[in-house]
Structures are given as C-alpha cells and as structure tokens.
Amino acid sequence: MADLALAVDIGGTKMAAGLVSQDGSLTRRAMLPTRVSPDPEIGTSGPGPAVAPAGAVVDPGTADPGDLLWRDLAGLVQRVLAGVGAGDRVVVCGAGCGGPMSPGGDEVSPLNIGAWRSFPLRERLAELTGVPVFVDNDAKALALGEGWVGAAAGCDNYIAMVVSTGVGGGIVLDGRLLQGRLGNAGHIGHVIVEPAGRECRCGARGCLEAEASGTALAAITGQPARLAPAVVVERAGTLVGRAIASVVNLLDLSLAVVSGSVALGFGDPFFGAAQAEMDRLCRLEFARGARVVPGGLGDRGPLVGAARVGWRGAGMGA
Image (cartoon, rainbow, N blue to C red):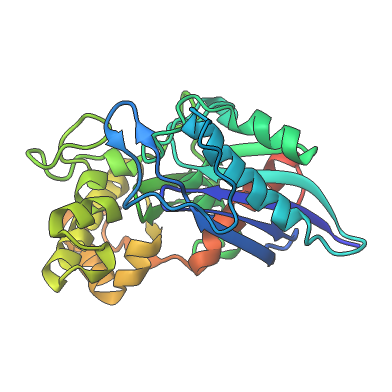
C-alpha cells in the first residue's frame, strides 16, 4: 500500500495531473490543452486558437469561460484518480499554477489564462478530491521539485525558472523557498531586460516574459517558438542570462536551473548564450562562476514540483 500525492499543473498551453510517490517518482499522468478564452483586459489568452480537449462536453449556454476551464481540469483530475492502484491511496493534492495569486493559492489570476481572475482554485480542488490541497506558483513548485530530486538537489541557494508559454521563477535562499509578502516572490519574468522593449501583459515594457517567452517569440517571429531561427534563440538565451545575472548579483546565488518547453527545446545554443551573458555581467567576486543548467526533471518537473508542494504542505514525504 502506497500513499500518493495528486499533482496538478496548470499552464497557459496545457494542464496536467499525475500521481507522485513520497520519493518523487511520477507513477501516472495525463494532460490536455488549456482552453483559450476571452481575456477581459487584453483580448485572448494562450498561444493559438481555441482547442477543446477530446471528449469534452461544451455547453454553448455557459457564459463563464472560467467554469468551462474548470470542467476540463476536473475531468482530467478524475481521470487520473480513477487510475489509483488497488491498495494505494491519495492523501494530499499539490498544485502549481501561474500567478499572481493570493496567499496559499486561495485565489489565482494567471496572466496567461484570462478566464481565471480571482478563481478559487484551492477550494475547488478540495471539494473535488476530498483531501488537503496546497497551491503555489508553478515556477516556485518547480524550484521545490528540482531541489528535491532534480538538478539543484543538495544546493541551498539557487533560482529555478520556467521558460515556456510564460516565464516564471522560484528562489531558494539558505535552504528556504522565498515567499514574499503575498507569496509571489520569484517573478523573474518581470525583471526588465530591454527598457524600451515590448509591452508586457503586466503593463510594463521590456519584461523578460515579453521578450523571451514562447508567446513573445511567436509574436516576434510569426511562427511557433520551436521554429525560431538561431539568432532569435541566441537572443532569448542572452536575455534570460541577463535576468539571472541581476538576481545572482542581488541575492548571492551560485546556480540557476532552467526548465520549460522553450528553454529545453532550444537546448545548447540557448544555454550557451545565457551562460555567456552571465559570465559577462556577474563580475562581483561572489557572483563569478554562477552557472545556468537545464532542469534535471525534464517534462516531469511541473508535476513532481506540484507534488512536493503538497507533501511539504502536509508535512509528509522525504
């Protein structure tokens, strides 16, 4: 008999759910595209046309796109829970979601999911699953996962980042995940890297997210980020390195772990450009030699990190 965490990851491109053991093993997972919906502030959310998941029942009379998105997620969670093995049991749920959010993830307002503004994610998941639920920013969740069983294991001072549809981060300092006043510490996607750059969803200009995220690169090149030419890949890596360097110099860090479909998909040219920019800008004695490395958990990272949020919140797990 094994105790399991239900892990939930909610992003602008896809949503995923899985089962994770107390040693960090991902035993089951499922995913589906995130439904694109109108954004009352900026038009639309997401990188492409609306996609209804296979088998989804769409009620044309439902006016609230947030409820439709919740139905998708609830169906995904129920599908994963139906696969719990005989004798096993789910004892906690951990969720990672884009921010910003209120403390504890009681309400989430992801910038890249326009349908959810002050959405009561934690309450909805608790009602659905019947187990304790803990919610945190998806990039902070990744930071916990990478420090648990990933590329930052054994390191007490590091930043973990996601470069995907958006850009997010989580910072571990002296062995503790930084929370901030409202739990939103680590938003490296909104460090300014090009002062006269593109307008960001947050309202500022030149944010890393507005210049190097998958959504930004698609807008800049007119094609999916994975098809970006070499010069765009190198620029994205350089800008990520520039943002990391600022954080390294500010907080005395030695390691940056970068995951996400854009960063991992671009591979060595991206990471080489990021490291070169860090070497150029990390000139203080304590900052010299800071490294940027790919996430060690690959595409498992978001769910392993979400599970770690759950295990940690419940005071369980290794």
